[in-house]
Image 1 (cartoon, helix red, strand yellow):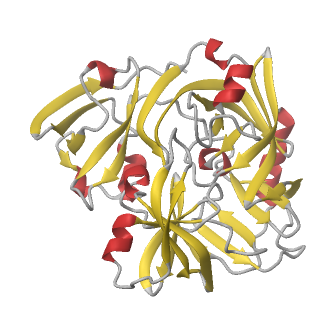
Image 2 (cartoon, helix red, strand yellow):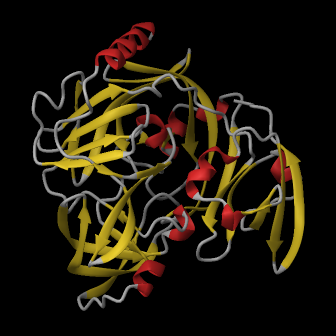
Length: 390
């Protein structure tokens, strides 16, 4: 793995400008947010290679003045154990990305904000994009949809053969869990996931990942489109793709019995916490992924020490919602529960904490006092951060 770090350093020193083609501004915090116009109305769409369709959030749809005529009903699944009944728009939804415009053939409408937070008005899938080249500069928060790549575009990048089938991108990955277990094969490239490497429950059972010590069990009230989800975080020795090795990564495995992380043809999904350490060019027509380490390549993978996670509903509901709780964490021991409404954090009203501020808000804190509301009653919950167990 040392050779990978040396190679990354050389590439960073010698790399040219990111690309010769056009790039447009995005927002990035665990998800890639694309500023868009949906049938003429402003929207912020999460770019999601794990979702084949471009979808709308139900609140955004209800507030839009555009009235769709060609609609139907369907069931839709994703991460989570179940399927959700959804409305579907057929062939009427148009949206922009940079200077390009696309029309979606099938556009489900579902409750997205409870999953991702109020910032997202929808998901941008890849089924409507055609044979495009997708470039993402995580570090500088830029993105591009190109017609093709030139030699100048990919100078300094390492090419990796991918499989592109049924609007899904599959990448070859090798994860060394410990001295006894290495799991390698095809993983789903899921840029709709904010995580690192997540193994399916079938792969976890086959490789006895439940025997890893230590590990942290979590339960999510809303883990994805399919509803509730559960799994375990642990520390893996390394993960490598295209000759690049990332050391001491955080990973997790699912305990779901249904959905995208149950028994699937792929071994797991690889999310933005992994890919954000690279500049990416995804050449769908030629089934190539081009990688170049960026300045965050050697950034450590942090252990979860807060003991919980939340969904930011401050814009529509006026609070954050506790959506994930770690078993035996200080947060759980203090009485915090999934579904609690967080009104303030250490005396600061959550409605005043922007998405940009949230990226660093918890970084130097060692303890929290949360003002919460549960079943109409307000109270406070105080606890210190957990010691890094993994």
